[in-house]
Structures are given as structure tokens and as C-alpha cells.
Image 1 (cartoon, rainbow, N blue to C red):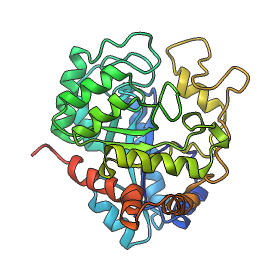
Image 2: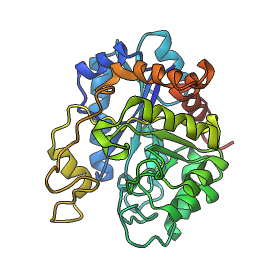
Image 3: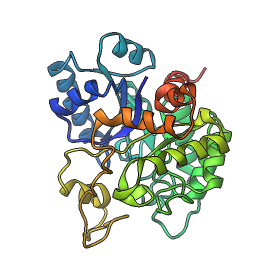
Image 4: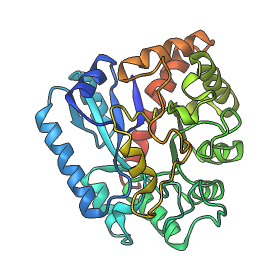
Length: 324
């Protein structure tokens, strides 16, 4: 089983066919960065069109059972998520509506302070807001997973401790391996996993040691070390693959409508666009290389299977439905 906990590609038949060629059973796709509720609904509509257009390649995922259905019919289950709480605007009632439409993950922040929590680019992190605490409770109730991938340390730790259900960091790496602002310090990872949460290892070059020149062995050794340190059950892949996106999309992701200036994020003014992916991971057909790399650094077949999809499958099964 192969599950990728985060992609934001420029979707096309080519990519859907690459998913099948790579035997990718499920992908969590970003369908909102800074969109309002109505704009997000239009993105749901676009995906409904793709499901109708390519029924032999993809299907809408709402529960883990849909992954089983996808595997049985040689398709990829698509799960929806937001990298910002903007689709719920300032209305907690929209949390349930968005879950009903098919959303299964929502980040509480995207780099900046939001109405709910603090992003990883802010100088100060006062933690969860009053509204953030209420929204987490509502997300727990309906089965919308709290994602803290772009959130600051204190906010993430508080979310892990407050949430009645496990939270996720869908796409990041350990800070002590690659010191990017988006990567996570040991105390943050510990807080998430001790409360049953999951972390997906990112393949986005700005999150890798050596960036685009990162070696597969180095990445896989990091995965094995993290599994040994924190427990194999809490980790998977969240590639953050942005395949075929034009460089202008990076500007939208980082800048949205909150500033008139260009925010280059982890990049630089000299190279504002998407970085080159490492040679060993260019698209969905390359997941097999990661499996081989994990075996080569000494992980057992069961451990490799857990990292490549088994752990996310269990997490999906336990956390996408209403609270018991």
C-alpha cells in the first residue's frame, strides 16, 4: 500500500496515470491555500469534474474503506485538505459543512498568524487563540483532522495536547536534520506522537538536507532514525509534490492576499520559483525508489510497509469519521 499525505500538483490526466503507474493508492491533495468558502466550493466542483472525466483512474476518498475500493479497482483515492483555515472564514459552523463536502484535513495556519493559531514565520508564538481551541473541538467532533504542518512550535504542542483525537503534521522533516523554519523540533514531534499523531516526511527540496542535492540514502537514514527514536507507527510520507505547477503558484502560496510584497519563504529573491526536485523523486512513479532505499538502510519489510502507507491507512480509518 502506498499513501502520500500531501500533494499540490497541477492536476492532469498525465499525473493521474503516473499515480497508477507508481501504484499510489491514496493521496491527500490540497484544494485551498487562501480561498474563501465559496472559492473552495468551486475547487470541490472542479474535482467532481475530474472524477467524472477519469473514473478509471481516480475516485473521491472519504474513509479508509475508499482506499480498499481504489486498490480493488486499480485506482487512486483522492482525499481533500486545506493548508489554511480560510475556507471556514470566521464561522465555526462551516467546519461541519466542509467535512460534509469531503474535507478531511485542515491546517490551522499557513506560515502566518491566523484566527486559530500562529504560523511558523511569525516572530512570536502566543499559541492557540480562543477561537482555535473551539475549532479544534469542533474538528474533533466531525472528523476533520487538525494539521499543523505550517504552524509554530507552541501552537503545535498546544494543539496536540488539547485535541481529543490525534493530530497530524502531514508534510515536514526534523529540524535537526534540515534546519528550515517549516521543519519540526524534537519537542514538537514528541508532543504530536505521544498523543497518537502522525508525521509525513516531506520531499520538497527546501525541507531536505542538501535541498535538491539531497541523497536518497540520507533521506532514508533520517526516516529510520526517526522511527527508532519516536516509534515506527507515527510516520509516513507526505511528499509535498508540486508537480507541473508554474512558478507563479509559489507567489500565490506564500503571498495570497495578505501582502503587496513578495514573500519568498524558504527560497530566496534570486530563486523565487519552485526548486528542482531531487533526482530520485520526480513524480508519483518514483515511490518504489523510496521503498528500495528504506530497505537498503536496514528497515524490515513490515517497517517499510508501515512508512509507505500502512500507518496513514490506520490513521485515516480512526480519524475521518464523527467522534464516537
